[in-house]
Amino acid sequence: MATKAVDTRVSRFPVMGLKEAYSLVPDLNARDLVREAFEQMSSAWCKFIMTYNMIEEMSDAIVLVHAPLNCPSCMKGYKGTMYTDFGNPHLHTPTTNVTSDHVVYGGEKELRQAILAVDRDYKPELIVILTGCAPGLTLDDCVAVVQQAQSEVQAKLFHVPTSGFDYTANGFFEDVLPTFAELMDPPARVDREKVNILGNNKQPYCRARPDDPGCERRQNFIGDAEEMGRLIEGMGLQVNVVFSSDPYRRLRHAAEAATNSITCASYGLPLSLAMKEKFGTGYVNLCQPLGPISTARWARLLGEATRHEAEAEALIQREWAELKPIWQECEHMVKGKTALVAGSANRPFSIGRMCQELGMDVYQMGNPISLKAKGIDVEHWIEVGYNPNFIIREERIPAGTKLTETLEWLGLEEDQVVYFYCDFPAYSRAGTFDPANVARVDTTVHLGRHKGFPSRGGGLGYKGAQGLCIMTMEAIKAARRKEGWTFLGRLYGKSFDSF
Image (cartoon, rainbow, N blue to C red; front, side, top):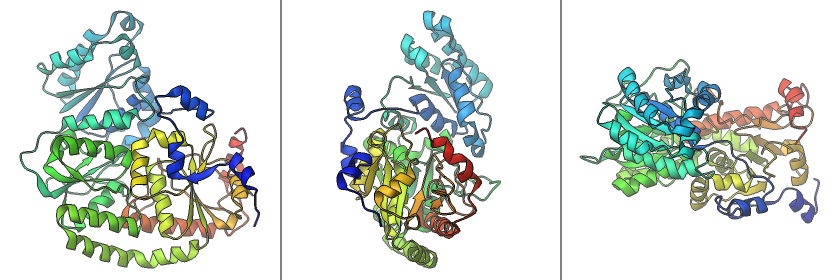
């Protein structure tokens, strides 16, 4: 096995614990200090895009954009395909169409007219007004417009300032998500048997509930929240609200549940904390459980919170009995292997933690700036005891590139590695880093689908662990070919030569 001098390794790809890597970055508001610490800082999302994501998933809500046409056009062109499962495939979004005239003279009159027209034509339960950069710069008094228009319309009006310049990289999670608690009604009664699922994103919730027949699927793909809902029901409890996914008319009653359970920490934890402060709603302090150890821990915490301890233990025994044969087979196949997991947040962390449960050495790969951008998420994972090796990549280099150099630096042979790329890029290079010679598990966040198993990222719960074990074993078997390079490996790897 190849070895490298310590100083050479550190200068190329520094490695340290997750907690230490997270501590390297100053507060992201201190932009000059951030640029001094790291060569490049970049951001892909703004408050507008992220908030639009959440609202569009509520079937009885209309997003009204007070901004130039480019803002809703961006969402249609880039995000449109993600919403077909929600019954909103065309993402029709009314807009005030802010022009240069409005930048000079203001657009408050047009905003009021648009609110009245949307209420008249669509008759929604909720109208959410999102304001882009232009009205944010001109200081349109959108709050006053909304207050005045509320008495003239049937819909509930909800204004969220989403100027792209008015946020840090974590501004959506910590600034916007807690405001959704303002859409919830004070509970007349809190039911200990009811549990909310928070943190769901870009996945419908199709399981039937006592007052909801559920939704039909065209294909048998399971979401993370649906797996969590199955486990909650398996403990004799009832799923109350799933956010986001449920319509506004259900979200209003979220505070009637005594406990929140969280899939994605980034999307679920900020709102859980807001509900804890506003309504006293408790929450299970373990997000995105994946694998038998973490899922059992989650079930026991939920059982304790709802006084369903016996039901939790019975669930754990049933689920483990079903998972055990596949889990033990996977344990045998990954023995002595190292997991390289690209990504710096919730789902990549859940995959890494499950790999640790399987007995693998784990290296997460990313940049501390990305960690800081989801600070509330990362702090949760550190708090619950996840502190793996973390390989720091330069910010300008995507986490999934230069993998052949990374293997050499780690002193690992191709048969000693399993690569989980989680998001993008889906790196592959014929002959050196291809699914035919290095095990590569397609755990993509955006488009990953594994029929019969939750599989966005690595999935969730016992079923997610079963599906991820199957995919991991298939990847290891495929990597034994050592020939017959994939089309992706022959073509796609060259696109990263410039990095």
